[in-house]
Amino acid sequence: MDRTHYEPETAERDGKTVVLGFDALDFRYVDAFADDTPNLSALRERGVESSLASTFPPWTGSAWPSMYTGTDPSHHGVYGFFDYDGYPDDGTLVSRNDVQAPALWNYLDSEGVPSLVLNVPVTHPADPIRGALIPGYLATEDTTGFPSDVREALSASLGEEYTIYSRGETSSDKEKKLDGYLELVDLRKRAALSLMETYDWEVAVIQVQKTDAVFHNFDEETAQRNVYAAADELAGAVLDAVDESTNVVVCSDHGIGQTTGYRIYLNEILRRHGYVETTTEGNKESLSTIKGDLTGESSADANAEAGGDKSVRTRLFGSAGTMLQKAGLSPTKVYTTAKRLGVESALVSLTPDAVRDAAGKHVDWRASKAYLPSGTRLGVRINLEGREPDGVVPESEYEDVRTELVELLSGLETPDGEPAFDFVKRREEVYQGEYAHKAPDVLIRPRDMNHQLSVKVYDPPFLSIDSYDHKQNGVFIGAGPAFAGPAPETMSLTDVAPVCMALAGFDVPERMTGSVPEGLLSFSPSVRAYGDVPYGTERIDTGGEEEVTERLEDLGYL
Image (cartoon, rainbow, N blue to C red; front, top):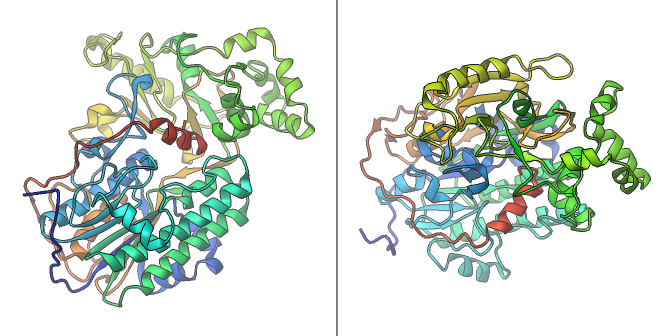
């Protein structure tokens, strides 16, 4: 099959399907902002809804591929924002080429059905499909779509440049940042309407990212409410553009909420128990990243406040933080107070030289026996001989080391005497797919998802936090003639793609690990093998990786 060009082809269907993906949409805020989200409220009234359990870990980089492939990370191979063939410092940003499974639109394409895909994360480089695909998050701003001129044509239709990211995306100016968010959601709305009018399609998947970003960067309810209202306007406009025979799915990749526990510096804990070795060579922390840890600010914003001076190195408070916490004062609160009084520079200057020197230490990945590779990875990786390039743990000791780690982490308590984790499991207890080997060896979930993990080697290993972060459960809403209901209390994020395949009139692919919950639809779809379904492309340009990494820093992911 020639996959570089397709003639328009539209199969007859009873109705179309629109999928509205809102990153981090959470029923707590849909309820709280109900007065400003009339379209979502109307969908809920006429449809069915369910709590949508994200995959593990519940982060954008791994969750959206789970949504669109209908498989968990061990079956599609992506566990976070970066892919590690070796050690974390050699990681590369993930792309569609790292997702080792067909997407919903690939299956439809194999059946001759056109789709529209707009702004879905980890869809670059664009799959060549019937219809159109414009990538979203983690793509660089100049990433092309499919057809190759789709972005230029869309920009011409809109009368302005279509962008993946917002104006002021990483700005420290909060007003400018929020204005950029709202402008971008509006741009996404107009882009969706233009594409829906221009292209033949049977299934349209439209994603909004800023419903997540606003919580990472704004504590103010007004900002959060305004972004939800803008997203609701997008939903209303899209629904006005289709008729009553269209089935509608609203989903999110995970939830979000206040996180008021601790930032756990797990590699410091592992260092104290002899698993992590440190080094002063290679990448080091800057004042800006330390300030970001202490204040909850994004590192990009903190760096802007520090005047961009990445050469200044300090570990604010260091071991003195332990005494502060015993006195009921976290370093965060002390630093925030000093900043408000305009004396934070003096506070930094008073930091002991020994503490400043300690700031230069970070994990020596190659010399360590086991380590947390990423704060969002939610697991400990063993530096195994024969697997890791410079592995130090003999294969004969692997299970013994895993047992030690499970025991250590299962017994770990926060300073208030509570268990740090909901579970500590060997990876095969969670993952069974062919890419399970890429996951950490021991998986951990922070208790109630109310703590954050950090890769930094920091003393003390627990710091109080008060911010917003991801929660395990997001939102599923289904409305339209095919929905019978009621929906189960909880569905899986991997169920979304099977449901959409069924709504489009096709059997659920056997390769999908998700399923259509019994009774959700007015019919019971069959399951079958689809054989070899082409997906992905070898085209990719990583030249803008630094640009995208800055945006990840802006959200506190790095």
